[in-house]
Amino acid sequence: MASTNLPRDSFGSKFGVVAASAGSAIGLGNIWRFPYVVGENGGGAFLLIYLAFIITIGLPVMLSEFTIGRKAQRNAFGSFRKLAPKSYWPLVGLMGIIAAFAILAFYSTIAGWTLEYIINSVSNSFAGNDPEVIFENFKSGTFRPILWQLIFMIMTAWIVFSGVKHGIERYTKILMPFLLLLIIIMCIRSLTLDGAAEGVEFLFRPDFSKISWPVILKALGQAAFSLSIGMGTLITYGSYINKKENLTKTAIQVSAADTIIAVLAGVMIFPAVFALGFQPDDGPGLVFVVLPGLFLEMPGGYVFSIIFFVLLAVAALTSTVSVLEVVVAYFSEELNISRKRATVIAASSIWVLGIFATLSFSDLSGFKILDKTIFDLLEYFAANMLLPLGAMLIVIFLGWHLGYKKTRLEITNEGLFKGRMFGVYFFIIKFIAPIAIALVFLYGIGLINF
Ligand code: TRP
Image 1 (cartoon, rainbow, N blue to C red):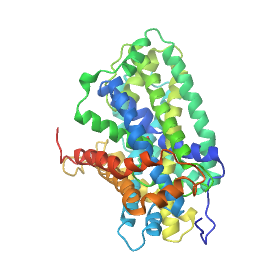
Image 2 (image 1 turned 45 degrees about the horizontal axis):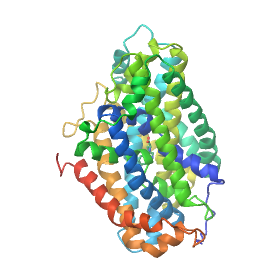
Image 3 (image 1 turned 180 degrees about the vertical axis):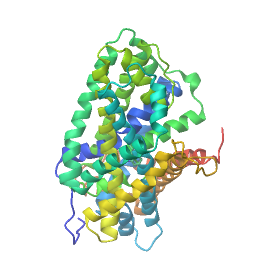
Image 4 (image 1 turned 135 degrees about the vertical axis):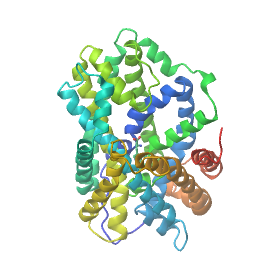
């Protein structure tokens, strides 16, 4: 058992571990991104490939991150330094810290939008207006999007500031069941609309003619982003998991919860889209343009609009918390400052970077680099480069550096569990996952083109 000099904060219960980790995984990736990516890439066939990746790649990588974190009992950087001293491996952790900065900067832009949309829903301001115009006017502004982003960062910082047990665990234990309730209400509403069946069919009927290499790779990228892997988020959370917990079971539960919510997001959105005669493949605007229009025509739409955007904000919040925690754990442990001070420094510097992401949509976005906005650059850099590279290096670290024996001991709690599937898992992380992820990476940076 790893002994530490400092008393380290940790999760206090099994449910807390799952709630916090599922809270990280379930976010804008599930509810904002997943439905439009499915919509653009052929529905059910994409879903099938996505599910295959979750099970064969996502789940093993998630388990690997938990394993590294719990074994080392440190932040993402410190974990590598402890398990592989005097090597270059800690750079993987550092990469994760940088990715966290980048992801939170652009993620908090969209998260801030959800707050504006809660207010719009409550004040019924979609009525009589074109949702497209509302969306364009809002996101091209300066003051309001930045203010919402700030408010979102303050909410995130408050939870992280309060600690692992008394902040992250406490809030996610309340928010995650709440989120599940909201999404079930929304699904029932959507499925009971006349003509809902067409949307259900669209989501589940595989159309393999749409499948191509880029689509397959997109499914893998979406799976990784959705499960929060590749950045040390789950290393950091893993370091707060009790030595008695079953990591394999936890990883299975979290992956299952993430997948179920993504599918439910599809079930909530597509039947409504089809029933009211909208188009399923409307890109990132699906949630902020199509849905408001849809709520206007739906019986009870006023209430369901509020529920939906609250749901979106809650999902985003438990995710932004997990990203900020990566940076805060690093600052406080490696620079030896208090959690509270680390939170203030991390959150405010990320917000400043985030302003540039938000302004990317404004009329002020004169600063384009290589013809790309800061938002696009951050998203591209983090999602297409740092995350796949991080996930690949993490499994290579376990498979080729830490090795079979030590990994097995940590995962089976020193031999307490039989670990019947361990051989399969280890084969995947040693050979299959690195190669599969490498393909995504090469595609992501454009070295392979289809
Ligand atoms: N998984 C979250 C979502 O689906 C986003 C997220 C949180 C994330 N932490 C992460 C993505 C770490 C990548 C890495 O919205």
